[in-house]
Length: 392
Image 1 (cartoon, one colour):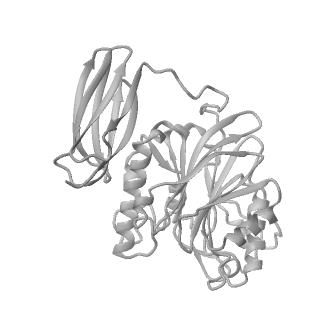
Image 2 (cartoon, helix red, strand yellow):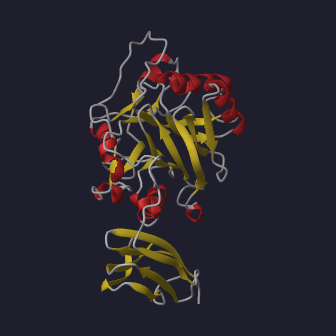
Image 3 (tube, rainbow, N blue to C red):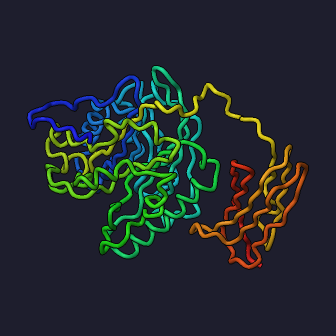
């Protein structure tokens, strides 16, 4: 457990970062830069946010509730030349984004995802970024997804969080991310043990149940009674963990077992009236050591394969599409189609297929219009393709 306590008279945050590890954090900086919402002193909020980020020495931040692009740029300027950031473009008054140390993080690509499901994500589509993490003794490739889920302990909020969780898991499971190290971090606006809505099953049970492929680093914090959401001007009354860090199995061996995750409890102790001046959320952070050998960006990215798959055609489709693939050697082939809720709607085990070029008709004529995912498994390698079923 990495809950660090400092005396009330401390004037600075004890640095968490180190040269050979990667530290990441998620932080909802309440209505950052808004002229009409609390906290009302925007200049003080900016100064306090700079203090938390700079003094904690955390390398990478997923941030939420950024209300002003100007204030975001001012924060980056205040942090200095070795910090940079990316802010969502497709959002309403509360944007998600990233702030990172350029000495450690090099951006490969960034884009919005799941924009067609923006209602489920409270009109704040997740922002995905692939980066090189450059440490003293290694460089690794990671993908981050920052989210800000629908709020409130009501049925609508609960159902939208549940639907968003399903969309998000499908996005990871049935795309090229399925075999990559991925971190999802952000304000999930709900607990993991039970939902804040009538103590229903957590809307993130789909991730919790898939223990072979996912783990919440924030879950032990919740079990131990830590809180990331606070009330009162001093932020001394901390309730549930609603800010989470979720990782895929490719990162299981990379987490610092001695100090896996924590809540930055120092912040209210060094910032006067933290809850009134800065945010009603505390940062939640985690540390990675990369002892297990996540693929280095210096290694070849394209591994020779003994097969080739062409995307299904036509797509969008009215009833069916043709999948074409070629095999250099005899291989075991399995085809599956899933809907957006993760339910299998079509399956075919083609068994042991001889080398050569093959075609197969995949049929969605009995399914409603919408988006589906075709998963093609050849031996132990899996590829996924979105399928759009148009109306008749």
